[in-house]
Image (cartoon, rainbow, N blue to C red; front, side, top):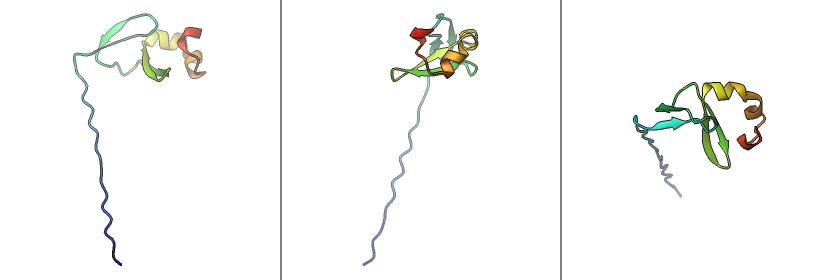
Length: 71
C-alpha cells in the first residue's frame, strides 16, 4: 500500500509598528520603537523592558531571574 504524506508548513509573520513606543518598566523612560540595547525580561508571562541604565544597575537580579518587585 502506497501512502502519500503531505506536509503543511505554517509561516507566521509579525508586523511591528514603527510608531510604537517602548517604556522602561523600572524608571519609565520611553523610546520610539524597540531599542536594541535595552534588556528584555519575562515576568509573570509577559515581556518587560529595561533601559540601558536600569539594565546595568540591576543586571545580577535580572540574571538571577528575580522579579523586579524584589529589586
